[in-house]
Image 1: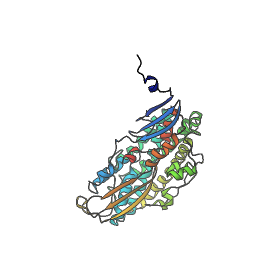
Image 2: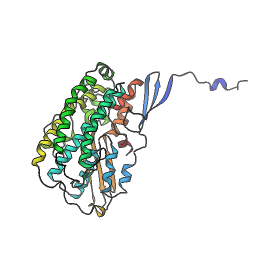
Image 3: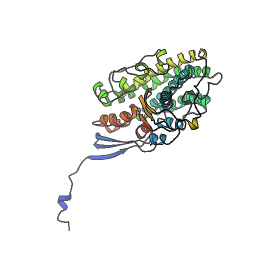
Image 4: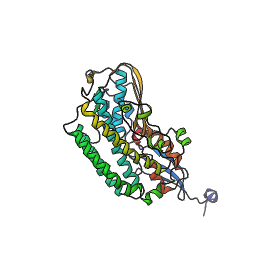
Length: 380
C-alpha cells in the first residue's frame, strides 16, 4: 500500500541535470573541474572548481627562505613558468634596491618570449583537441619540445627552469646556444603555414569557434579581462608596451587585435602573436652578443638573507595576460606576505561562469580552453 503522502512527495519530471565537467585534458590545463546545470544541451549555469591539486603556494612561500621560493614559483603556471620566476625576482630586487645588469635583463626577455611561444603551441593543440582535431595537439607538443630542448641546454630544466634569481640569472648562455635558438625558431616559423592549413583555415574549426563564447568590450572591462583575451575584444593593452619593464621599451613589436571577442578571435590573436614573439626573439638574439658585462648583481648569503622591510607590487605580461605580485617583507629571511594576482583567477572563474550561461554543452570545453587559464593561479 502506498503511504498517504506518496503523491505529495512525487516531483514533476524535469530535464535539468547537474554534471561534473572534468577534470579533463583537453578542456583546461590542470586538475580543473566545471560543474554545470543543463537543460537538454543548454547550460543554465556553471560553477568553477579549481581542483585543489597545485595549491597553497602563497602560504608555502611565507615559510621558506627568499631564495628557496624560486623553486616554487614556476609551478604556479606550468605551461608558461618563466614569468612567475621573473616577477618574483623583480619583487625581491625592488625591495632590496638591486640593479639588474643589462645582459641579465636581455636574457630574461629572451627566456620569457621563448616560454610564451611554447605556451601558445600548447594552447593551439589543446584548443584543436576540444574541437575533435587531435593532430594539432601532437604537432604542438612535438614543436614545443624543441623549445624545451633549448631550455634544458640553458639551465638543465625543461619545464621548471629556476634560471632566474634575484639580481639576475644563474649562469650565462652556452657556446653556440644563440645560433641554435635562431635555427629552432627558423624551423618553427616555417611550420606556421602548416598550422594555418590544419587549423586556422580549416572550415570545421572556424565554424565551431566563430560566434561561440562571445565577450564584448564592456563585459571584458567589467570582469577585469587582460592579455590576449582582452585584445580579442579589440582593446590593445599589453604591459610590455604600456608599462614597460626590463628592456621591452628598447624592442619593436605590435599588439595584434580582433573585434569579435569569441573563441575564434581569441585563437587568432594568439596566432598573430607568434609573429611578434618571433620578431622580439630575433632582436634579442641579434643584440645579445654586443651586450657584455655581468649576468647578476652581488647578493648576500642567500641562506642568511634578510630582505629590507617594505612592500612592492610588480606586474608583467604572461601568455595568459597581466600577471602581478604583491610581496611584503618585515625585514626577515622569509616573505611576510606573497600574493599572486594572476589573470587565471578572472578568466577561469568569473569569465568562464559568465560565458557558460546559455552555451551549449558541447561548446564548454572549447570555451574553457579558449580562455587559456592556469588553475594553480586560482588555487595559489
